[in-house]
Length: 79
Image 1 (cartoon, one colour):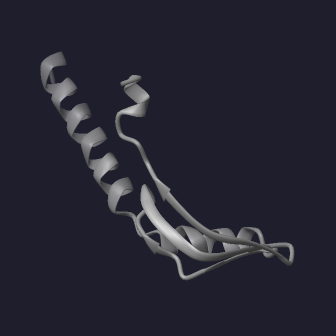
Image 2 (cartoon, one colour; image 1 turned 90 degrees about the horizontal axis):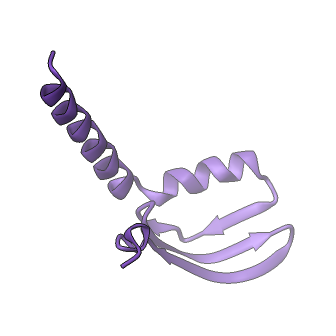
């Protein structure tokens, strides 16, 4: 395989991984975090890994309120 073909394969693999991350449900991550950190409780999680919200966050018995997150796609490029 020549270098040009390898570059296209790598670009395709990176694009696929970004697509998977952008559509990965946040609820799966919340369930995983709850197993690793039993003192953390997330209620009403919806959206994706890059853009979502939780209606209520409790950590060690303290109510932290609602949380929402949005990834700024232009921030890594400094624009």
